[in-house]
Amino acid sequence: MSTITEKRVEEVTLRREIGLLGSFAMGFADVGADVFLAIGIVTLYAAGYAPLAFLIASVCYISTGLVYAELSTLYPYAGGGQVFGMRAGGDLIGFLTGWAILLDYVLDIGLFSITSAGYLAYVIPWLNGYLALRLYGYVFKISKIGLTAFTLVLFLIAINLIGIKESSRFNEILVVLTISAELLVLSLAYPFSFNPIRFIQQFKYFGNPVKLEHVFYTNFLKTNVENFIYGVTLAMSSFIGIESIAQAAEETRNPRRYLPRAFKYSIVMVLLFTMLFSILGLGTLGWRGLSKVIYNPIAVIASKIPYIGHILALYVAVVAFLISLVSTNTGIIGVSRVTYSMSRFKLIPSTFSKLHRKRAVPYVSIIFFGLIGGAFALTGNLEMVAGLYNFGALLSYLLVNYSHLKLRVIDRDVYRPWLTPLNVRYKDTEISILSIIGMLSTGLLFSLIILYHPEGRLLGLLWILIGILIFTSYRKYHGWRITEPISVRMMKPVITKIKTIVLIPPYMNSELAYKAIYYNIDTIHDLILLSYIQIPHKYGEEVKLNWMEIYRFKKDLEQVLSDMCDKLRRNGYRCSYYVIVGTSESIIRYINSAKVDTVALICGKKPRVKSNKGVFSTNIKKDVNILYLYIPEAG
Image (cartoon, rainbow, N blue to C red; front, side):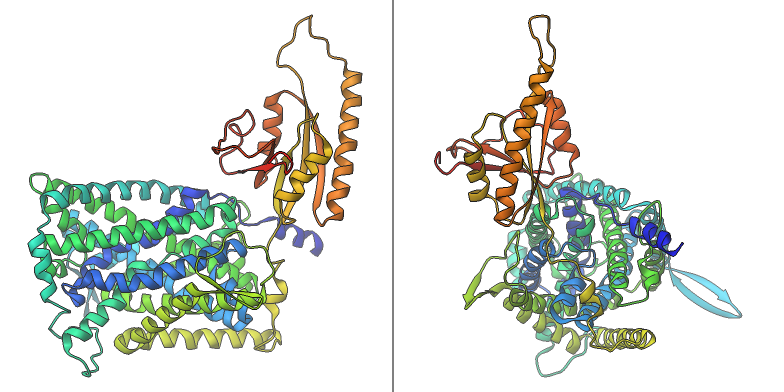
């Protein structure tokens, strides 16, 4: 009875439902929405040098984003950084990385639900202000924005309980709408409302000269300099969330192809929009005007466009409301996948890895941590949540960059589908310069967060202490040592094989076909040699099919493929073979239903211009790689 139950539990797994657009949408939504939040709040502290603050913070974002791109293709598991830390430093480092990311996502839910409610308040002004609640003779003030944010979180929890496919589609639609709206504002605001002279005048103000709330001033530097440094730490909030792409790696189709592209597209788009809007805001409103509208800065910028500004501002506010809602949604997706992974690898109780039998979603994690994020949303306090948000993100980024350096040594010989640029070879190891840059930049920013953010310092360290207490208690309960590598033992091989169909024409010389495979395809590919006997779609009396001859020909082909497979297996490949008898449509149908990552086509020689033309390549599903194998003698 227990065996049957275990089998049923294993059958409920995360489903690969996310394509390239969905993967990009998760990264852009979680990071791209930050521009609607960060422009105003960073300018409040950095003043006229807000673009420089964003540029400094972007060093950490770019280096860490590319590190994530490599590691998520190497370890395409739900959990992202937590899995990388676990593999590099054992269970404790894996737990600390995951626990820091968990804080990041819980605060993401609170932060962007508040931002979403703030833009909604631009459209519905009644949402500004407070509600008075009388309880046992006491009067409590509840922020209307906070209450609205909490309601939005409940709505998104319900969507995520339906399934990842529906949640991802929700992201995709709103990300496309957001990019269109941002491009519209930029294309109209720069020629009609941007004032270059006003923008240049802002460089007189290096940091806000006035002492502000939420900053711990050391008094070793001038107030404006310390405010600028504080602004740099807040600017990092504009670049947090890129790890969301990695969280859904286990639910992404063809992750080795899509994940690096999704990371790179997100990095470029987010950096471009952030810098353009920061410059636009200073040239349109000035730093003082921009710092007064921290809840809805992009809508106010749009309102300054002549003639259509008031209409466009409402449109932008609606779009900003929606994309911030999507960022909140990616927070719920991320927090549930991190806890699912941590629970599955025995870092926290197994309750959080429970999947719904029909929906295949970690419903306990979605509800539990979604409500914790909703509690932060109820505060309606943007500055406090933003400071704490950066604490969790930067700690996790620091550990991920450290893990990348270690994994280049630990798993030096494994197959890497994508490699970060800027590498130096030392002995037998490729050392990543980007990881070193990432460690230095995140380490510096994390130190500044601890120094200048008293609330982030206190609550962040408290979060870490609570996490260590949970980790040690859970270990003691099961009788495991703190350093015992329980989770590492559970990990599957570092990289799974790439399932590849090699299409071999029926009359091709088997020796040439073998060489085309041997010289062009690495042993990481799990090969299916596929040949075919194509019959006409329609045939009249003049076409006579001798089925006995077809049967013999099929047997001959199978023998040729069998011999070829034996030869390939002796050289370290995994190989099987299949012969299809049918029309071209049936051959394509088989390829598309085989759930492979790559289809390899053998060519006579390398063409001068790359082309995807051909009956087979043009009809194969878009999420499958097309690989051309060139015969050495013919090349």
